[in-house]
Image 1 (cartoon, rainbow, N blue to C red):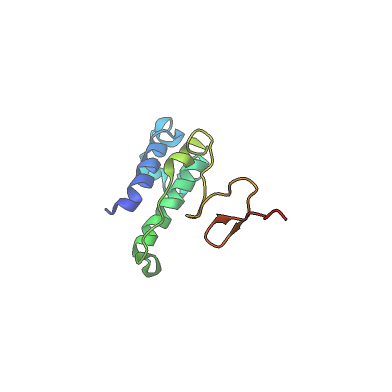
Image 2 (tube, rainbow, N blue to C red):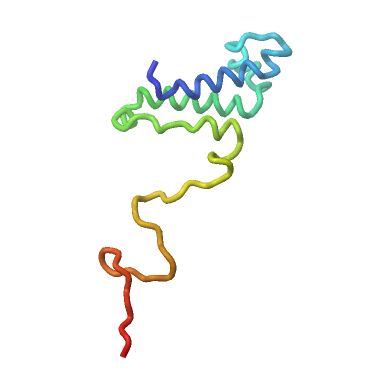
Length: 116
C-alpha cells in the first residue's frame, strides 16, 4: 500500500476501535463501515472514512497521480486544535518578513530620506 494513505487508515482504525459500534455493541469494524451501522459512528469516524475514500480515489485518479495526494495532517484533526501548542504557522511564501515601518525599494534596501 502506498504510504500516502497509511496515516489516515490507521487513524480510521483507531477511531473504529474506540467507537460504541465496536466496543459496546460488539460489531466487527468492517460491519460498522457499512450503511446500516454507519450512521451510529461518531462524526469524526465518518469524516475519516470519507477522507480515506478520497485518498484511495486519488491514487487512481490520473489528474492527481502526477502530483500525488496531498499530505494529510491527521494529528491536528484528531486533537481538534492547531499544531505547536496553539501557534499558527508563519509565512506561506519564501519572502522576507516586514521589519518595522521601513519601506523597501528594489531588492529590499530601505528607503532613506535625505536631509535638505
